Structures are given as structure tokens and as C-alpha cells.
Image (cartoon, rainbow, N blue to C red; front, side):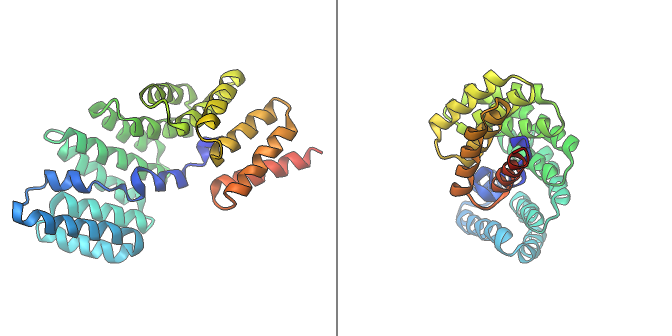
Amino acid sequence: MPIFRVTEDKLKKRRGGALLLILAFVTAARFAAADEAAEARRYADCTAQAGAAPEAALDAARAWEAEGGGGPARHCAALALIGLDRPAEAAERLGELGAELAAERPALAAEALGQAGQAWLLADETERALAAQDAALALAPDDVELRIDRSLALALAGEYRRALDDLDLAQALAPERAEVLVLRASAHRLLDEPAAALADIEQALTLAPQDPEALLERGMSRRLAGDDSGARADWQAVLALAPDGAVAEAARANLARLDATK
């Protein structure tokens, strides 16, 4: 299983978990100085509620938008829709918000468009995710998070070489990010470049020795190299470190396949 397939958990955790833009939105919104703190608190409360009680958050965001809440209210509504497992609707709203902000607030627009791409991936709409991410990167070409996000979409589309191009740039911009090296190792492995894959994954584990995704990926590289005992040790380490979630499921599946060959 390519590490790129372990994406939904990654997407839900990216950009601080809740996909917040609180400071940027408060700055961009047309609030009087005396009202800024109150509006910031309202936005923070709404976005926190989007994760804990998304139905209530959606109702609150709609009421706030009717009162003139503007971008912050609409952004909160999009987050609530993600919490309600309606990512396609969220993506539409985030894309519209990004398009409206592009002329005057390009950095904020790139963030919203990047989040639209994340939501489209959660909706299994890879091509639409790529379109949103392309638009975001046109506004913020050196944004590492956007490069990582687009690499995920490209890999899911089977475009591993293009995914590697994004990851190469992300690694140049953020050389200490183990996550980038893990994804790059997976891309090299899928392109049948085992030496490059192993070099990247070993570097990733130097930076993050107990990273479950890195251990999962190294196990796959070791298995392809014929090192069954090394692969087994890595996948067992994954289960010891993170026994639940998508990475653990992938480790168990690989162990089962390994056992079936004995």
C-alpha cells in the first residue's frame, strides 16, 4: 500500500487540525476596532464548535452570515460541513471564498483554495482538488503545505513523477520536515527507484526515529529488497507506537501478506 493512500487522517489533521484562519480573517474583515475582539471570539467559538458539534456550528454560522459576518462566518460554515461529512459542499464554499479574496488578499485566498483542495480530496474528487491546488499555488508558489497537499492529490491520480516534483521543492524549502521525506520515499518507490526511496526514508527516520508513517514506508522498501525480517520489525514497531488508525491498518495488512508467503 503506498503511503499516499493513508491520506484521510492526514488531511483531517493538517494546518492545525481545524483549518483555522482566525488571525488572517480578523485582519481582513471590515470590523471596527472596538468590535474586533468580539468578532474574533465569535469566530474562535464557531470554528471550535465546528469540530465538536458541527450541526450547531452550521446553524450559528448561517445566522452570523445573515447578520453580516462575511468571510469568517462563511469559513466557519465550510468547516462545519466538513464535520458533517459533506466535504464537496465545503469545497465549493471554500473555492468561492478563495476566488473572492484573490485580488485583494492573495495569501488568504491561497489558504482558502488550499483548504478547498483538501475538502475535494476528502470527497474523492481528485481532479477538482488539483484544480483548487493549482490555483492556490499560483498565488503562493513557495507554500510548503500547499506543495505537500498537491503531491497527495497527484499521487492519488497516479502522477508520481509530478508528485515528486512538488515534494522536491517542498524538501528544499523545509529540509527538516520528515513528512516530506516519507512521501518522497514513497514516490521514488512507486517509480521503481529503490535506492532513492531508501535514502529518503533513512533520512526521514534520522529526523523522526519513531514516526509510524516513516516506519511503515521503510518496511515496504525493505520488503521489496528481500529483507523480510527488517520489514516485519518496522511494521511491528508501527503497531507498538500507533495501534489505531489508517497507518496501523496498513501495517497489519502488510504483516498479513508477509505471513501468507511463509
